Length: 199
Ligand code: VGL
Ligand code: ZN
Image (cartoon, rainbow, N blue to C red; front, top):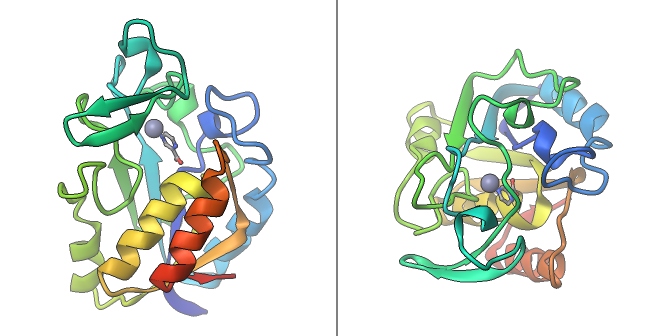
């Protein structure tokens, strides 16, 4: 049994084929993610959880389309199709995800005016989710990350995890990427330079 905490990022219907912001191969990672859940002593899940009309949705900005960029008070923000709206089927975990063992579910992106990719901080890079404190208080120093999407929520979570001093590994074989405008290569390099172990 691996005593690192496994952090499973956003394995939700809207990020899987047929969903509103489908990641290619998003559902193909499920067998491996489920095996990682079995293999780890501690399991934490994240769930992208936006109110309707969230400011990261292109539909909330006149004249904007999904994948356009806008300038928010906290910096540049990519606009997305409406996705993972609180209480909808798209926001549910994928039906094959074996989530019952999870000790904690961190919901993120629930403030209308700010997006949150990372499991640790919202996109202003300052508002904490509480996850670092939760893990440290429990004496957990090692993290293994998997889920969706490699180049957004997984990558930002991994970068923040190392910044918090966690020994951090990303299981690339249990992740899938959006890859928008070279984002996958960019974020892989940033993770490598930050000292994230890419496996
Ligand atoms: C994500 C874009 C918008 C992710 C969430 O889980 O990677 N990406 N919201
Ligand atoms: Zn989102």
